[in-house]
Image (cartoon, rainbow over all chains, first blue to last red; front, top):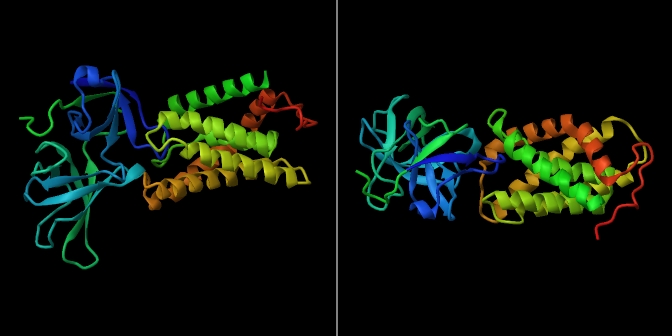
Length: 160
Length: 171
């Protein structure tokens, strides 16, 4: 369902946007919100005609992601106003990752989002402190600043 | 009438924050002119006025955010009170004192909010981003300090040359 963004982030401590669709249109908490470019966030609060969407860059936001080429699964976490995501666990040292590799939602059991929604591209790679895994910084493919319209996926897990 | 004027200033400031300031992030950080209101209320009025205006404007902002209600209200209330208390103790007058006060108080406001945000478990900003946010908010508010003080003087109906700090009271 296409929705208009009626309010963006208000302060640097605000990681939500508001859209003009609510429970009256079938929107529920937890639903994924996307644009043509990729994942935007999830619905966190619903009223009759409005919903709040937490952006994927919120520091409290964690969800499963998968490297599209390598099929490795990790957990992405928002980095706030920085506008990027970070994957700190799940990508082993042996995985051959390069900057620019595509990242999508993992869709494994218990995931927040349906599988294979584009999330972003790998921006930089560095080893973890114990050098057993790799830390990936992800640049979201959806432009989260200045959103005008978004799409709410009216499904929880099976959106095929 | 004073209360009505101050309420109108709060309303317009929130509109400016939502529809203008928030839309133009600088280095990824957004300005905060709502805390500026508490600061100039403390400068142009006194500690009590700063606290009341800070609490009221923060509460309105809280209603628009998904952070716990009262976080902005408490932070801005304390900032307004501290600025009013500090300003009452300043004996010399110089053009830069209110500007410096605004810059410092804005930084205190951002850091205070971040601290409370962490305490209540929201943690909506990575600590590494705080210096940028502090710098952007403090500099923007420093630039806007003079016009904001003029607006608050009109709201308080206080003559610019001879501040009357006893005329205003919230009833």
